[in-house]
Image 1: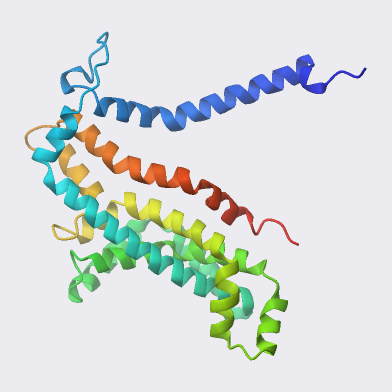
Image 2 (image 1 turned 30 degrees about the vertical axis):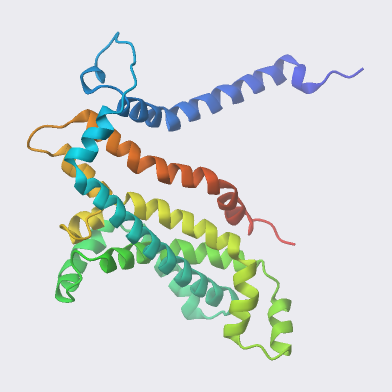
Length: 281
């Protein structure tokens, strides 16, 4: 009987190599998160101590609630901004992706390279020139400025994802709808949107993760009213009274866990949305 290749010395060596690689990736990715979460439930005096038995406690979360009420206000602001930016980015990207997929011209081809080039620029390059414009429009320290900036920052990537996805929707469906008297708006609403839902979910996940954790735009364009959670975390680090590490780790855990749980729950939709345009047929 032929020997199963998986049980040969070379096959076992490959399996061992893959197992080690997966373990290293998991340690690199999940190790810091595990350390932060465990420190959040550790008494502050024991966080950096060695040889001390771990005794879980909620005192850091209680202190966070009592002394940093601004953090929870920042979480609410982050939620509002994230939802607004996601809705705007998904709608704009889907409309633009539909246009790039169904129409061809030199202008559209050139604009694709322009969008990609702008996306490659560091955010600070485009942020500073925007400050006087935002200030003149009276948008400083408002939800609107962050929603617009976060959505605009991801429209280029979202458009490319949606164009690739919509390219896989047969044009015959558009033509059949036109034969029935449907307008382009009706085709978009009744044909394209239902069939491109997975791509929209993928774009939404990208925007949500980015907007929830973004710091630079919030630091430059907000001061109090629209201050987001990452900005409050930076204030904890720069506190004049010294860094309360237990409270900081507790706040980081509270800010991290919702978005981590969201990504884990939506990973199937993310993978489907990103790989749907990889094959034809």
